[in-house]
Image 1 (cartoon, chains in turn cyan, green):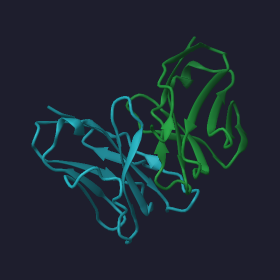
Image 2: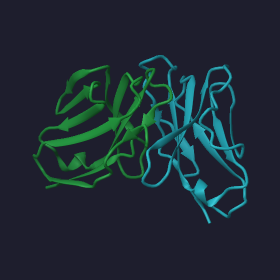
Image 3: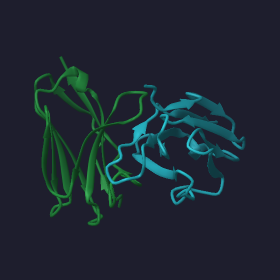
Image 4: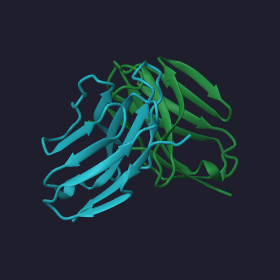
Length: 115
Length: 111
């Protein structure tokens, strides 16, 4: 079946603008994660959603970052007033649940460049 | 100091070589250890995972965890050009939730 999809693939924006990144998880997956991958660094956890529970936002780096998820479907990560240090690949992953051995399946990422 | 340290490479080897990839970590609470492979412009894909210490083998891949030394390894036998990718270690206190990743090691296998 279809994997995790993300859009846009690439986004170039000017400093100070807002951007929205979209993630479509695998159908039936109740858990959804967002990560950030800066050049030369590992993936940083940002936020995860599990069903109708309150999301775990502990990884969001500042209040300029926010994310929403409608039910168990699409999620949007919004970055307000973008800064150059926000330039990174933003990866979304989904899993059937958040059980101990529920594997996360990653999308291809959105490459964000803030000029 | 980062929680997880990994040499970024690149590591260049000839086809057929045995490859050793490693990570060290500082958080003794980590109990779950994973290795992901990431091809250029793709998302990471899970290769192997282990719980606590010990070895796990899957085909040409062997994952090894030494909790006493806070050191994990991934060995690739009979390496192939198709193994050329970035290998990321990841670990957590509880399963696949809130994984902490290394920076990744770029591996190049030449024919």
